[in-house]
Image (cartoon, rainbow, N blue to C red; front, top):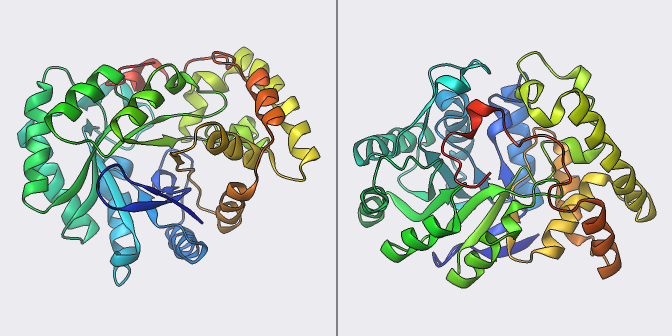
Length: 332
């Protein structure tokens, strides 16, 4: 398993890491036993970077990881987030959620996360979404106090602009920025990746396999009733039909390399943007092994160019999120 420095924290993280959100909600019913087995298998495979948030399952995801971490804490670099406050588990609640970056909220949220996770220190604490009503200096100052108190090791930001990153980093070192990045979501290439390199900030890519779409195995018609992708613009009627056509070329490259389309998508990301840490999410042991093996799949410059041509920036039809889910995202 590859490892990459986590900003300037002195920590390193596995490449890939593991996004744990789907073990609690958003992608249909989850089974706790299956999820705990997957977490154990991930550690056996060499994963040591686990990503969660207080909003995933309204605390359930952190509690689940807390159960798993007993006796294993020293084997894991643990990331969680604050900032999204939701009224319920309903996939329809996105329009009702609010973004809270106030010092009082984030301080209380950190304490609650520490309790649910059963740890004394969070390795990487992200602002999940930005609310400009709270001055950046106030938020980063409150986060920095958590570092001073030993409750947090490194600070992170999610879905922010390069300008926000630079301003925040000038107040306190930022260890990581997390945003969506994949073959069909390439906005990070505009300026953010270079800004991260300039500041020695790790870029963490969530949804690096396009929320399962780039595996070529997803049947949107069979998604669970509570799967949030049912309301995602990229999985809707005409947009879906246009996006399905993007998969033909990806599948052809995968067949030539005796790999899965998802592996090609991950290999493209780490080959094209060295230093980026993808965190594909899964609850299945077989997928964990497949994603890890993708890191050994070196694409040729010609294959990378071919994929760039198949998936140029803006090629995906439909927005990344439905309207209610864009709150707090600074660069769409």
